[in-house]
Amino acid sequence: MEEGNTPMARMSTAEAVVESLIRHGITTLYGVPGVHNDPFFDAIHRASGRIRMVHTRHEQTAGYMALGAALATGRPQAFIVVPGPGLLNASASLLTAYAMDAPVLALVGQIPQVSIDRGFGHLHEIHDQLGLLRHITKHAARIRHPGEAGERVAEALAIACSGRRRPVALECAIDVWGRVGEARIPDPIPLASPSLDEDAVDRAAGIIGQAKRPLIVVGGGAMDAGAEVQAIAERLEAPVVSYRRGRGVVPTTHRLALSFPEGHRLWKEADAVLAVGTRLFPQQTAWGLDENLAVVRVDIDAEEVERFRRPAVGIVADAAPALRALLARLPAAPRPSREAELAWHRAWFAGELAKLQPQADFLSAIRAALPADGIFVGEVTQIGFAARLAFPVFGPRLQLSPGYQDNLGWGYGAALGAKVAQPDRAVVSVIGDGGFLYQANELATAMHHNIPVVVIVFDDGAFGNVRRIQEQRYGNRLIACDLTNPDFVSYAESFGAAAFKAGTPAALEEALRKAIALDRPALIHVPVGPMPDVWDLILRPRVRGAEPSGPGF
Image (cartoon, rainbow, N blue to C red; front, side):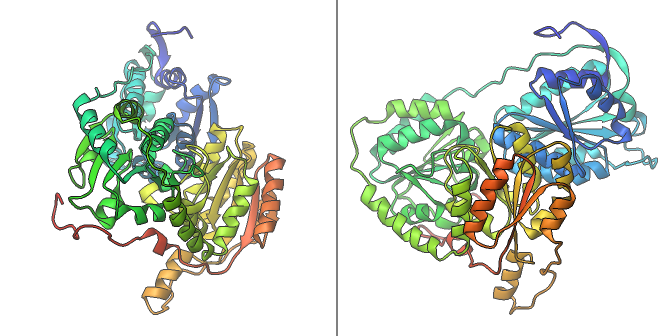
């Protein structure tokens, strides 16, 4: 197909959508086939060699694979499911993508166009499917005929990738997919960036540049601004705090990089905070604010800047150009080193981490075996919680976590998608026995498509976090928390995957090295007992200001 906007040509709606996806750089599609989307899958077959179809065993995994691929690359990804039950099965992945600002496109089938929302009882009919999609996406629309298919795809992907990135959806009726008509395949719509408020940058530079104890907090919105964050941190001797999605914006081994609990210790005495691409949620709602702490926020989302409280300065812009402008205005005079102070906080955290056994040693084992550019996909499990605080991360998009949705069972599918999108990087899914069985059947997908992810299943025979809460808060009245599991090694081997059992951190490191070297789907079963509670290091107490009261605090 020629470059640029193509001339009008006769093609089906499905063909126009497939060509539009390819024009936008989407060369892999995840999904589960079904009668509502048959013409679309036929169009994918006829485009073979230009776009790859990865079919999964459950719609939730199709959505999670697209999400994992988007998080690992920063580029838009797409999946396709049938309407009704298929969409509902995949809806958690869209909800998670929304929480994580991920540009995921959901293509969803529909019943015959004339019957939509009329209650006839068609196969997979659901009332107001488009309205449902609009609750969990940034944008949702219907493709009604071939002539608008290309424009709908271009519009949806532009919306997904502009401003605050988030998922989008397009639905298409069963009888429209195969309809033939005149269609054009447009080029991607250029993305507009907000103009930089130079006055706001000047005021921000005045606050941050004059601060004696500045602190930087980064989130997922700073992923593409790591160099700029690091340059400002070094100019000001300002520690950089990250948690979950911000891990790796600045390598966690950098002399100014601090963990979440260490950041809490510095929060009390900070006089200025530069918050980049982060909701700053625990800091504003739990750690506390007062009149002696000036907050400067850089965020692409104008609503986010003032969601909890109006900052001293809010800069609505892409992080990298805003930070470059800020850096140019900061004083160049060298600052006194904070090495001794930060070393004291690190020593405290090392002592706290030493109490988190065996989590700390297992994480050290994984770090030793995983290449520096390998991708660690965490889960809602004790090892995953500890990893958000302590797993060394050497660059952006190398540690993936489910953000504030924190939904159990997301991890294996996300890891599969990350590996498809980043085939030259080792990908490890670290998951509990409870979460793994949400998607354990997708070992079939890994084997069928030769996706060499290594899944490490930490097996305590329970929904461990639920069990601990019941023990600690409900007088050990245990209900619905203990689990019956398969023999995980035999289970993996039954699919043809490589499988190992490791009872110690040393054995885990050895097994992980072997599994990565095999370059095939693999599982490592790690039986464990109860683990010490990590939540005291995450749910930190208020250290400044009064408790918030009422809206707009």
